[in-house]
Length: 197
Image (cartoon, rainbow, N blue to C red; front, side):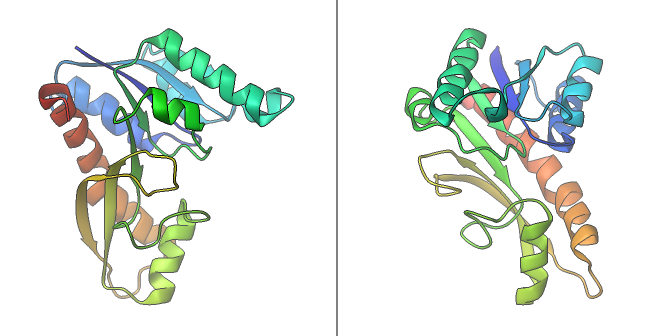
């Protein structure tokens, strides 16, 4: 049984895709042991509680400094004994000590085809705004392992999505979620549960 901890900062639509994937049998031999957010108001925490999943808020705001927050976050993750950590819209940089402790055991979903539109400042709607400004015809989503950099880890899987005439950032974001993110992340988790990578 693959035990996963999902880390999320906002609404948790990718978390919901994982919950639904486990419930429907699309993801097997996998259990979400906890959801962690840096944001006490994140709807993802409500989704977790409604599905009987332990939910924790560990926010940098609650600690004197980033070092203290990093230590507390790592301590909590260690206590949960996760096999895999899934970053599903988690907007806090993962501490380097945690990246090393969980090498090749932390994955992230990013709403573009890395190496395009990724790195510092590229998150949420900002990604889709940049895609439309640049005039690219194809965007998508990427699941990758997390390393010390920002969106620089080894790519596991990608799924392309066409940009349509008349797209707004919001419309494009929704299409990338529906056609790529919500399909790709459950597939990769299931693959890891059964193949270990």
